[in-house]
Image 1 (cartoon, rainbow, N blue to C red):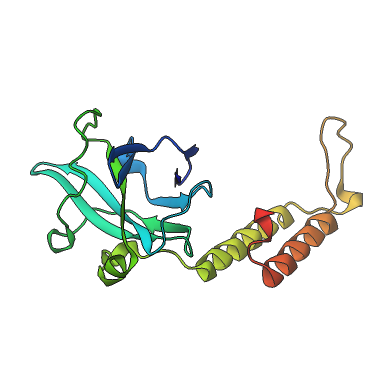
Image 2 (cartoon, rainbow, N blue to C red):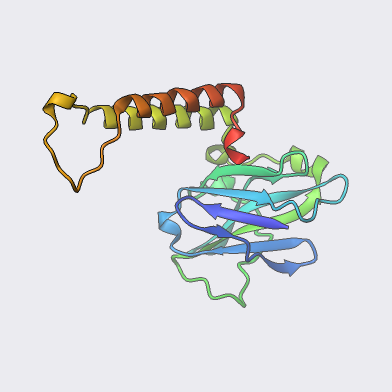
Length: 197
């Protein structure tokens, strides 16, 4: 039912059910995690009126600590969260208790999903630094990435007269890269989700 992607890592679908309405993903090397995506896989929807509260659970010297990141629902099947240690006032009662059957050392943590009524989830306040990314920030990131790539590739541009024969090197005309860049930007403008197809 659930999937999880830690930025820079493979997709995780190895969710463990630890209670009737509670699921966890174990995360290793937590100090290297900055963003995480939690999503519904599309195989099983939430029951009507229900959603999934997303919690970040990690060990501290005082014991396991949790913070609410936000939630997912049938009409909001995915969310991106920035992970950071919670301030003491942002910690919530740990609904997952860091499953003792799974060895999680001081470099590990868990993403917990708790199935709860949507009206209850809507009233909870996620930690201030974990608000889900909006599509606009994704579009902005993609445009900046494209510009960076185009500028980088352009910095190597030379004229045909400047080229020295090198049978082991491949060359791509700069106008091909420029055409790709313009086409990608046009597609992003019309449908920011076109790349999912």
